[in-house]
Length: 390
Image 1 (cartoon, rainbow, N blue to C red):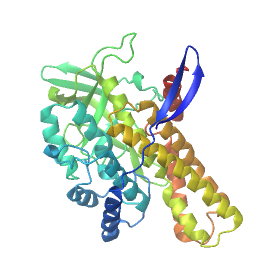
Image 2 (cartoon, rainbow, N blue to C red; image 1 turned 135 degrees about the vertical axis):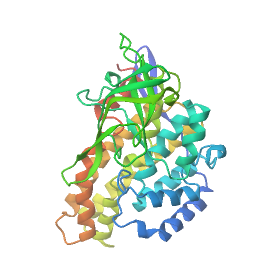
Image 3 (cartoon, helix red, strand yellow; image 1 turned 60 degrees about the vertical axis):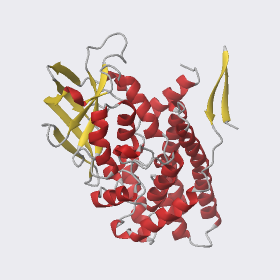
Image 4 (cartoon, rainbow, N blue to C red; image 1 turned 90 degrees about the horizontal axis):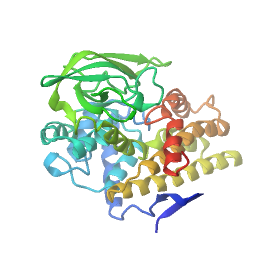
């Protein structure tokens, strides 16, 4: 039976629904296989971190591709394995928990590929999807823009039709790994804005290495470069790079966000801190440490059940936009909370060096947790609309 969250609002009863779903028993064999694979390739885990945006390792991505663990649910005709969302969930959970370097293929596997499967042309599917499943083609997301806040409908990057091409002008920001990836799928305006702010938007594929795009890495406080500013100055791309129908971009991008917001990465980004905290506290933790460990474990178990439910509903082709937004909102709060609970249980200045390094790296990454996939204000707006509150 589904679990429902009911909200008594006139004139009707509105609800969020999480189907009561469990991982299938046969996935446990796959889990053991994944753990064995990860053990064999520990040489790639120089600095394990469970945040999916860390560890850009093309060789490791290609090894995952050889196992059939990229594009797992996709048709075999495009290099996929035609497995279930449950099996994909198990692989995702294990590679994140182990701190594997997955950022190279992550976005292509999680959302760019599914977007192309649903809306792309046959030629686009034939060209891009097999490269993704082999772990050889990496995608970035071109949604956010400078000076527009979190209002995705206010994008100003334009793509003007010019014969058999589009001429793109504008800027995207917070673009993860654009300086290392091959392609970016951009949300652009292909028609002037009207009173309907969601009309006239389209998605288009740009080759980050060959189309004349200016990619400017944004250095963080630790000197790393994960986010980028991507500038389009009369960048010309063929018209056959448009994904779906011109003007259908808003429907496409909102469906894409359901894949981005609901996976285990939304509550496992700080998981290595939990692992190292448990190790540092040892088999006989102090009472306050045991309480902290229990609090973190209870939160992970709850969000995992919700995330598995969304995976099951995606398997059943249900619309989970609101439920996915709730998973990400709760996950964001938890990811912010986890390091603080850990700090109270065991100060980061303690002598446990692995714990300290993991803690400090997560603290440096944590500001990005609430940016990617939608800020908490946007997520709460999605949830409120789903409940009929706005």
